[in-house]
Image 1 (spheres, rainbow, N blue to C red):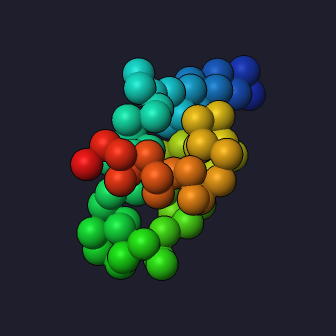
Image 2: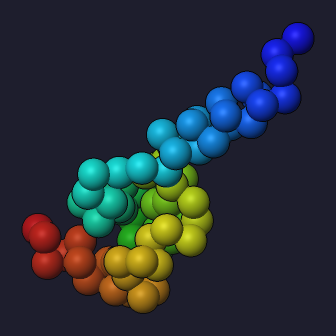
Length: 78
């Protein structure tokens, strides 16, 4: 059995790896474009974009105020 400290250290490391992005905004835009391509803009949700980008459901709000702002950024990106 692993010592408790080792398990906690592993969880912290795994969490940091999961949620760290060099360019979160670009990762979110890429994920949003994929959702729009597959499902259409009506199927786009902040949660789904976050899930595909591998971040918490709250992380996109650091870059986009809401779903509409995210869609606008995807359109502006081209």
